[in-house]
Length: 348
Image (cartoon, rainbow, N blue to C red):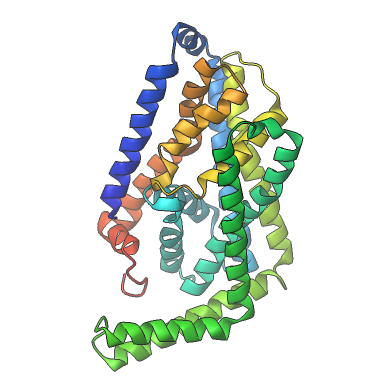
């Protein structure tokens, strides 16, 4: 799937599902509540989004310091926006990493270290959600009550996460095995004429070995000399999630809806946990429709749908738009397409 196609699918699904939600759920009471919304609280919601960006940028900086690299706060903000853009145009929100690794590479960070830094950033979020979701479900079991589909989906997500952690642990414990597997893949590519000379094969094998060593070195540095920076990254990750989860209760307060803060956090933690593994680009369609379904636990149905859309606008659409601006100005659409298609950073 090309980037343009991914972006088009994202827009069509997001706006199509949003239009359907508005058509089916918005009534006169919804309109009155929106018109009477507290404008200062809407600005507060926007400020909280900025705070989330700051926390995300800060943890990029902290993880880079743990790896003995120096990522500036400004570059951290750029990496945050690139992640939103890449996630919006790829299935399973998987596309943010390559853009971040490329941006780090252009600033002198080796590819292996860049992969490790971005991977640690993502897995910190997943780890926190993995711990928070079971607690949330125990404290508020009605979140999944009466929905076998959601229960099955949460179980599936836990299995995927466990498999992912097992794979990461394997790469750190058995780097030589990973090198051998990469060599086998390269030789198979040569056998089917994807590479035109043995010199190219040797060059790629050496590059892979070097970057795998950088990848392993990053993890060792992070958990030896960089423990304090990793701890700071963990704290910033928690604050980042709390900032994002705080947007919804602020929006609910703006339109006069009562809420229990802990319950809004629990519902959103479960929801984000699921969205990480939705196959549509940027979880579009599912994020809007699923939000309308889950948020009905927190508020009347005539408000749940529109609040899902508005919350998504604040927490995702603004960041995705900033990501588009960064991609066009910093990388250019041609380089972006090459990264998306799997071209190596070295060739780019």
